[in-house]
Image 1 (cartoon, rainbow, N blue to C red):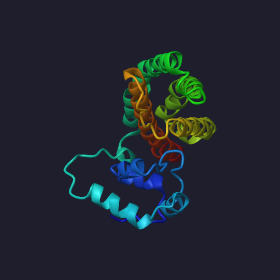
Image 2: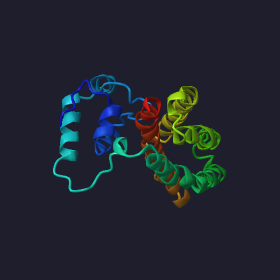
Image 3: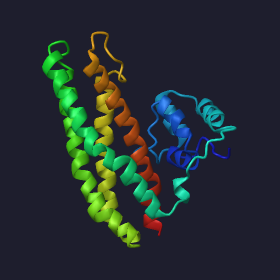
Length: 223
């Protein structure tokens, strides 16, 4: 492994995709915060960069799994991967999570009156952000890149990156409100399913934003 503590977390996640497992375990932001060196991120979180590097080494050592390096794939294939694996699944998942969140607030809102309503409003804000964001990518930015006009897309890309930052802040707030998605003892099945669904959404969006911020956008601008 050639990475060092001054390597950015975004580059590490790009060149060693399995490293994202380590980053997720330690809540290291490798998508919107991908431009920061590992040492800086570890210092901010009170972690040892040497320990994190050792965990990454252990994660990637002797793996037989064929890990796709999206920084080496054609841009058209990367865009198709993003659409199929990240955009389209949320067409159904976002309404499903919204329905569960409303049900949990309606039935159990009195048990956590300072928290559950804010979780609902924060999630609905995230849903609105994503549902406005995806068409801009699908109708404007991605077609520009596919036409070979990525080098002229700095304006749209800046907008998308800013919106990614906004979504990232909402994800952080959801994690804070749920105490890291720790399921309360009194939670019913719907409540538990909501917590698991939101945790999965966070993980998926982190991978999604990483693919765009750290791989697709830089490659498009350099094309």
